[in-house]
Image (cartoon, rainbow, N blue to C red; front, side):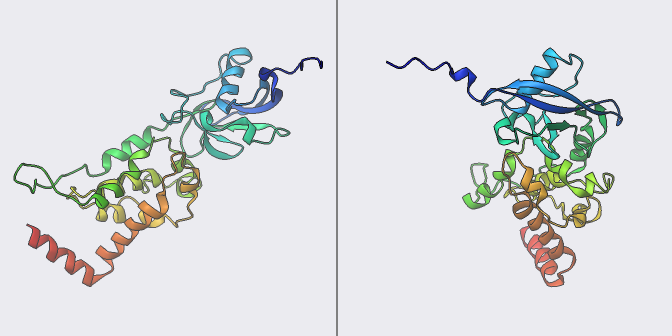
Length: 263
C-alpha cells in the first residue's frame, strides 16, 4: 500500500510572492518591496492585508466589502486599473513582482489611497431625474419593456472610478474642470435614455461636460469590473444625440415639433 501524500490541500499553490507597494503621501513616495506567502485562491487584497498585518501596520489601503461591489479598493495593479479584491494572484505572473499603486487620475492621499471626492461633486452638476406626468388613468406610466431594459445595464455601476482613472483625458491631460469622464457619461445616459425622464442634458454634455473630448478608445469599457459597455451603449449614443441636436437641422426641427405636440 502506497504511503499517503505529504502535500495537503492547504499547501497547493503555496509560494512566496514579491510585491512592490507604493508608499508615500500627497503625491510623493516610492515603491517598497515586500514578500508575502500566498496560496491558491488569494487575491491582491488578501496579500495587501497580510503585509499590512505582519510587516507594515501603517500601510494605508481603502477597502470595504471584499466582494467586488463597493468599489473601494480600486488601485493600479501591474500598471492597470483594477479592483484589488477581484484580481486573483494566480492570474498574474508568479515570477515577477506584483506592483500595486494608487490611481493616477485623482489626488494622492497616502500609500494606496486617493481622494475621489471630485467625482461626487461632478454628479451634483448633472440634471436630476425628471419624470413626465403619469399617462394612465390609475396614475402610473406605460412604457415599452425594451426601453426599460436599455438602462438597466448602467445601473450595475459600483462607482469604483476605474474607468475615470484609465481615461486619458483625465489621467494624462487633467481636464477635470471641463470633462466629467466615462462614469458620468454612463450616469447621464441612464437618465437621458430613461423612458420616463423629460430633462434635456444634451446641451450640457456638449458645452459643459466635454463629451467631445472622448475619442472612443474603449479603454474605460476594458477596465469595468461590471462589464458595462460604456463606449458602445452610453458614450456613442450620447454623441449621436449631440449630433442630432446641434448639427442636424432636420432632426432638430423634428425634435422641436415633437416636443410641441407632446406639450
